Each structure stands twice: as C-alpha cells, then as structure tokens.
Amino acid sequence: MPYLILAIAVLAETIGTSALQASQQFSRLGPSALSVVAYAIAIYLLSMALKFMPVGVAYAIWSGLGIVLIAVIGFIAFGQRLDLPAVAGIGLILAGILVINLFSATTGH
View 1 (cartoon, rainbow, N blue to C red):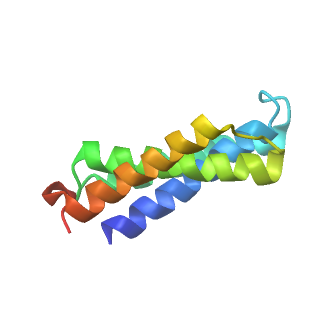
View 2 (cartoon, helix red, strand yellow; view 1 turned 90 degrees about the vertical axis):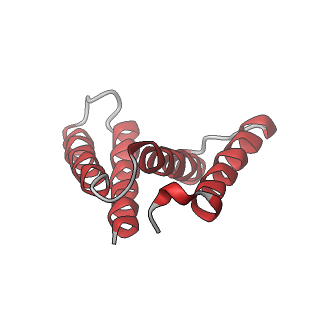
C-alpha cells in the first residue's frame, strides 16, 4: 500500500509540474490552479507514505521518478529535447531507484 500511495503522489507531482509549465509563470488561471492543487495532493500523499517508509528512501523514489516522468512529458508535450549527458543522468537516477528498491533493506517491503 505505501508504494501505491507514493506512486499516486508521484503522479500528482508530475501533473503539478506539467501544469506549472503550462501556466506560463502563473499567468494562466486554469493551469496555475491545477498546479497548486496537484502539488498539495502530492505533498499530502508523500506524507502518508512516510508513515511506512524512511523519508530518504521515499523522497528519493518520489523525486527520482518525478524527474524521469517530467523529462518524458517535456519531450512529448512541450517539445523539449535532452542531450546525451542528460539522458545518461536520468538513466542513472532510474538505476539508483532500482538499487534502492531491489537491494536495500530500508525500503520496508
């Protein structure tokens, strides 16, 4: 259950960040409001996941997956391109998340 809560928190954070980009520096009301609401939901759900997971592990997963998803959304929705070092860095973030979840005893699973 903590991983489901954390996954929904990541999704909410990703929606909030995408809406933040679409808000054009808070000059558009709809995306601005969506961004604030999505971030509030993300923080709340992250706090719920912290009941079951260490803060360092939960935040590493939350922020790492958020970075990866936002990079993909930036490419698809906003036409933002990444160079090879950026893609390699994102790959290392994913590798770190996998190492934490597959090999660390601190994740609580």
